[in-house]
Image (cartoon, rainbow, N blue to C red):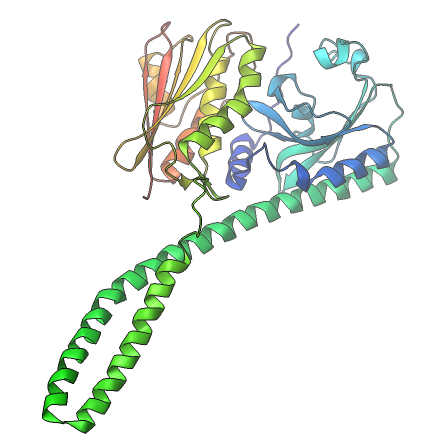
Length: 399
């Protein structure tokens, strides 16, 4: 018997908050590893995970004992934790009707005990810190529960620090761009002043205008100093060696392709779906901002996998068109009616179950539309019922 997936009352606000952190789930593990070890020690177990839960997927971004990587949201225990304000505990998963048939319970040496604390940002639960054991256990003591809550709070603090560092890097890069523009703007006029001063100096030298010459000499020296400063500003931002790799706050099409394959091949394999990411433009090493890209494309991919039958295909195509990043996510799934397309584009899409009975949470495509419009892009959908769908995202990219 299927069980209705629990959905927090503030679900859309919750996934918006998670998306605002703009986290790359594949490279933040080192920030939480010590907290996982501490949580496992406090609970007296071997396994501890930091799980973040978006509209479709539970992402295990850090762990000790075992790192799951990712799990369909409807398969997870932590989906229940994020509906609680304090904690969620199951002494024996094999005896709980909600979990007894899950693979991580039924497999040899499967899990029995679970304890989770929600990761709270204000009143929004973006994920959970959890501990697991392969043996049934007694309930944790109040003292241990409080210690795990303190550790969960520190996980959230570190997520905020990661985001703050990303924002700082973005502001520094923007300041560098402004610095370049100012230098460019003053360079031309200053060059003209210096040239004019040289001409007057030459004429004055013939007329032996000693006082004028002294004055002009000062103009020359001052003008040259400012010009040298402008040149220095312009050259300071140029890397001495161009490695071809994007900066930490940037992607290029090649790195974005690699990241998407790393994140979503496991989901596709679980459902036996052929998942590919192609680059159909020669500018694969042109850098552009990471801003919200993984959240936008990731939700589209998860949605495509959800509504594509086993043995089907999901193709992501990445390209540039006149300083516009074009992302196409095409699937061979169930397709969309004209009314459904209009609902989605109006931000009113309602969730339905996937082709393998995956639970729906209602806000994945609404979130995509929100994020795309927030950064000045647009989304369109080309689909016919029963014949798959193509989602097209166009995002302006500053050269």
